[in-house]
Image (cartoon, rainbow, N blue to C red; front, side):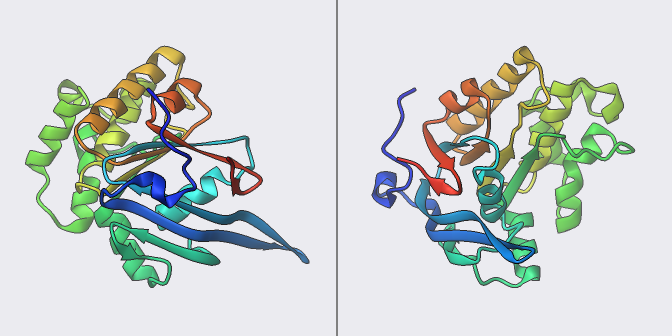
Length: 235
């Protein structure tokens, strides 16, 4: 798949509605007497329905950027809009609601609740949002190919199956944006390829996907890459 124009140029995203607009986005942390700039002046757009990979060496700022996009952290510089909403100055309760209603997360270590069944794990976001879940759970388990495993618990699943449950759970509340942090990092190459194909199907269905990855195949599958080094987007 061809690489689109450079990620740091907002004009590269074209005229489609932007899922993400970052302008001068930065994040710094105090460390003793020093200040560590984990992310510096990041400016880019991600179109609605786009599949983007954030790539770069360890310590380059990838997870920091993903945490800002997911409203799990707040920037110390710049502005961030998600789906047209400026989120940089939201209160913690407002950010919590935004994460719950508009953002789905997939993590390297799955994050499933071991005492719950597959179906119960998938339904968790709807439970916290006090929304009906049964029909949506059925749809998502069919999407990820786990309808027959709905009553199993995580310890009865393979790594790939656990990641599929995590993806279904992330989609439960119809998110604006799906964020994945090294989603194939704990999987063998064959299982990782199956997760890649699932992401491609979700993208083809119109989902906006942003993945942090060291996996060359997953990065290559994205329509565009945002390369980071030392906290800065690279040419």
